[in-house]
Length: 359
Image 1 (spheres, rainbow, N blue to C red):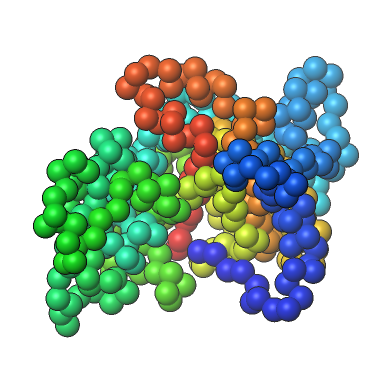
Image 2 (image 1 turned 90 degrees about the vertical axis):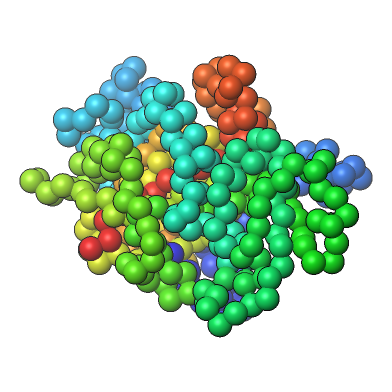
């Protein structure tokens, strides 16, 4: 799904990399306290495009900044375009608070469930009920087994056999030399991606239709079809066939890359933002082209089709501090006791769901 330029000695000197470093989270090196207590180094955000402010200004007086246009399209939400980037569409606040809550919950509870694959598969194999196990403070006990010739290629056979257990239930036999354990909360924080629909083979950089998979949930398909409409040709309908869900914690970033493994680049990638605010970089066809920076907030949707899909893009920063995260509305919606587990996660995280038509 992703392709980055090959790394070379000049990679840190490209315009894209310089901009990544400009916005990346750094801590004040003058502080002698631990990292948890350090304050983020101040960053100049004056050049970051803010579509929320653009929408508010447009609603007040009809004005738009140079280089930004409003798409004349019968749609529930305003759709903005960049004049110098054909195929790029920004839909601010496209998702209601209720929709954001739904897809945050699905992203944590349902989407990492097998047969969907996650970054944990390569070490632990298929893990069931990760979020619920983290909520219940459970531990994954990995019982070592003897590798066999039938074990799946690319998965550590020693870790195929595992079960959830409460930490207080672990005894000397579990903690002995023949087993290992890791807390569900650690695994949840190390969850970086899950894949829906057709599964992507990262080792071969291609979709593998033979891998077990479930279809993308119908409700997500319908939402993606609706949101993709501004980027589709008249009479054509988006067909969601695969999706990747990215999970970001404080300090995480997604380096500049291209999404280039789908057959028809005229079809958009539908990208949904959930949780803490982030900075998104949209560059050119080379890393040497200086990228534009823009804010992504919870509920925003970005469409990239056609020429826009040939441009490097990435996420160098998410904001988890109270001043910049901008998730107050989500926090109010997640105030019930049953929702605290979702709030505890999302107040320090960002989730991105991007949906694709593969064929």
